Every structure is written in C-alpha cells, then in structure tokens.
Image (cartoon, rainbow, N blue to C red; front, side, top):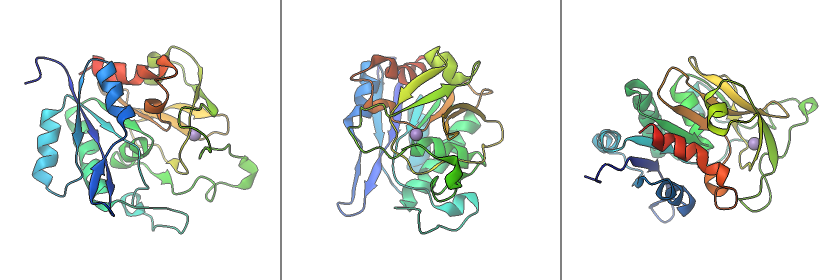
Length: 238
Ligand SMILES: [Mn+2]
C-alpha cells in the first residue's frame, strides 16, 4: 500500500493528563530521512490492534519513555523507580515478544532496550545509582544539557550487531536514563558498555535484526549523520 517502501512502526508515549499518545519528531524524521514510511503506534488497550500493527509494519521501533513496571521482571517497584505507563508496558512487551517470535526487525531505544530485554526474560536496574555500590563511580547518565549533546563514550564489542552498524570500537552518545539492563536475557549479547560498565547496547545475533541501544540516536543525527546508521540498518533489513 506504500509502493514498496518499508513501513516502520514507532511506539508512542502516553500523556495521562492530556489523554494523548505522542512522539518527538526526531524519531519519525529519521525514518523519513532513510527513505521509509513511519507509522506512529498509539497507546491502546485493544489487543487486536496491537496484532494489526505488527502485521502492517515491516519493522518496529520501541521509543524512549518512562519506567517499566518492575512486576514484569519479578520485582516490586522501589521508591527510586519513577513514572509507570501500564497500558504502554503491556502493549510494548507484547510487541517485543511477538517481533522476536516472528523475527520482525526491532530497534529499541532507551526504554526500548529495557522492554526488549524484559520481554526476552532479562532484568534491569530500577535505578543504576541506587542499586550499584558508590565504589563503582557511575558516570552522569541522566544528562543535564541539550538532547544532541554527546556526554559519554561507549566501547563497542567486536563482531556484534552494533559493531557492524558503526564499524568502530568507540563512539560518543547522549544519555537520558537512570535505569539500564542488568541481567541480559537468554539469547542476547552485550554489544557495548560505557566506561563505568553500564550496558549501553544488546542484540540477538540469531535474529535478522534485534538491537537495543540505551542512548537516543534520534536526537543526534541532525548534528552528526553517523547516528542515522541504526535507523538505516533497521530499514535495510525490512
Ligand atoms: Mn548512558
């Protein structure tokens, strides 16, 4: 129906006060830049619609957002966890599990890497600062500054999906998270860590393309084109 261009579904955030599903333009403009058609997936409780979006979309992006209900990884929500979006949680965990089951290309961004990891049976830190010893001397992962600012480096593991995307061992990224992957899901491998050991990217190498990144490449590409690469790769396999 879109004359052969890949259709990329992007999940949206739900604003409870305004009762609105929304998404920053950086996400869908990145997809347009790469020659594909972005489709915004609204947050809805109607499960048949989740299935229909999976069917319509050639690839899925799980976008950034609030914290995931800790019940999904067998914990209670701690005081240092923040806003929870329950309908979005159940919808995105469903989309991630189904995409993995049918090998539909999947890119998880920030919250998205955490959704993928949890959907595949892994766990996350509810707060990296509260749940790691101060001896670890964690970096500033919840940056104060413009969204395009690249605040910390990541070390990319050779022969991983992410290495094949960027072709180098070290890049700088932005950082807007206080949570991160802790127990890596079965079938997944760590693709990159920051210098303090926080996991910044995972992939499932047995799939066509399943990559999760802890940073926000959509906020970086306008100033630094190498950050379009994860989107280009997603679209190239769709
Ligand atoms: Mn970070």
